[in-house]
Every structure is written in structure tokens, then in C-alpha cells.
Length: 116
Image (cartoon, rainbow, N blue to C red; front, top):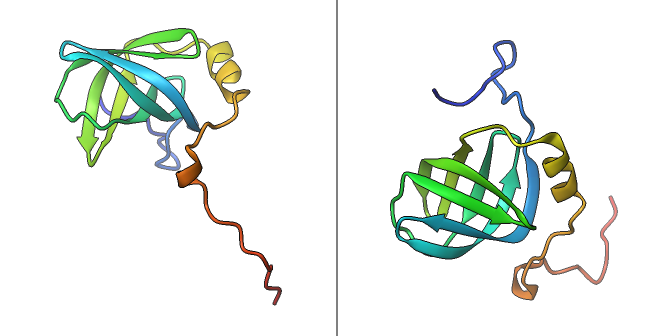
């Protein structure tokens, strides 16, 4: 068990797709809204306000769902490893969806660009 790391570089084999889309996390404690922050074929990072510890879960997003296990939890974030790798077309269809960040989360755009 553990993360799938490349033996030559020490990096993950599956690249993570950075996102910010609405999702649902279903655990034995309930069904919670979460933000899907990143996704790969083998796992996901989600942000969630409810910090109940769980083991098994179902992550639902964009009409898709995957069973998984909690790998770690810290400061409102949790890492999930999927029980089975996702089909590549699921990752690709998720990539096509633009991020849905709340207005307050967007970085301010400076009125002038400073050139050096």
C-alpha cells in the first residue's frame, strides 16, 4: 500500500488534475458537500468543512462516482485513494469542466502590471 511513486523520480505515476468543482462525499456519517480540488486516476483531494474521520466513502462529481478509502486528513482537506483506477475518459471529461470558485476566493487582479 502507499502512494504509487515512480522509482526513478520519486514522483507520482499518475499526474493530478487541479480542479475546484462541487462534489459529494458519502460516508457512514452522512452525505456532505465537498470541493474536489484535484483528481487522478488513482485518487483525489477534497476540501470539506465536516471533519468526521471515516474509512470508506463514495465520491460523486459531475454524474460520476467512485468508491475509495481515506488516506489522510488535515486542516479541512482529505486524501482519498480509489478502490479501482478511474477510466481515463472520466479524468478527461472532468478536465473539460471549468473551476467553480466562489467569488470571494478569486485573487484580486492588479490595476497596473509592473514590468521589470
